[in-house]
Image 1 (cartoon, helix red, strand yellow):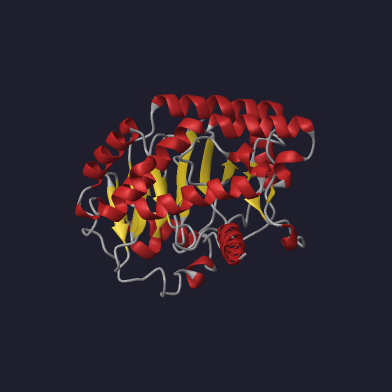
Image 2 (tube, rainbow, N blue to C red):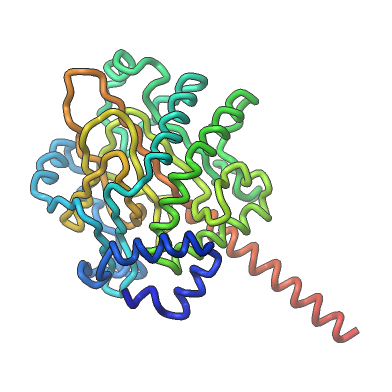
Length: 342
């Protein structure tokens, strides 16, 4: 794949260890030709798809999903300028990664649980009584371990989400959960690096700077090549078609799922595809630009669990880090000029 052999991409990957680089090169070969699936859009100039689709009746989603092309092989899709929109690798995540997250999820739900979501685009029409009867009061819902701005306090800069730190018990449980994602997050990071080295490196560098400027965010880090400062967990909840409007606009998010369900699909209707989305399948997606939803998973006669996780960055946090970095270096240069003149 020639797009990963340029000096720019080689420089982006220079922070990897030799073993990690071998892993990435193997993924590059498995992904194949990045020009095979090119969509006539430009993520810098094209208006994001799906506003009309998102407002439609939920029944529309199931009907459309039946006609989408089913993807079960390694897949990479780009916009017309070669910027990846989707990087997909089935049967990719290691058994070690799956085991660690599975244990982490059990401990999280046993010790803390999750909260029912607030009504929004992705969580409408929920039968909360049925969900509570099936999974218990804390067995369904969402959790955000994230770096973002608190409502009404933008001037204070990014903060750790209050869902993590309202009390020492909660802080301990959520930090343990974050660290349980260490292996899966690193494997997703390396897949991101294989499919879009420049975007991946921008995210890695931004998160490192964020930890310098906001030391509390170090509790969200799981490795030195971590490209995402936030995690969203969705436990046993269906999700309607949506775009993540606060996510990075031009960078990508990592998606994975866990649980006892048998089969599901991540639908991307504006691309005309649905990615098989079950345990060990890995997706790197532009979640801001592309409308997406998880097709109803296989019906079972016994209790089925399903957990999906999104590793992401908030666009306003990326912007804040960039602004802070520029201001800091402008000040340094100004001081250097004054010293030279003095």
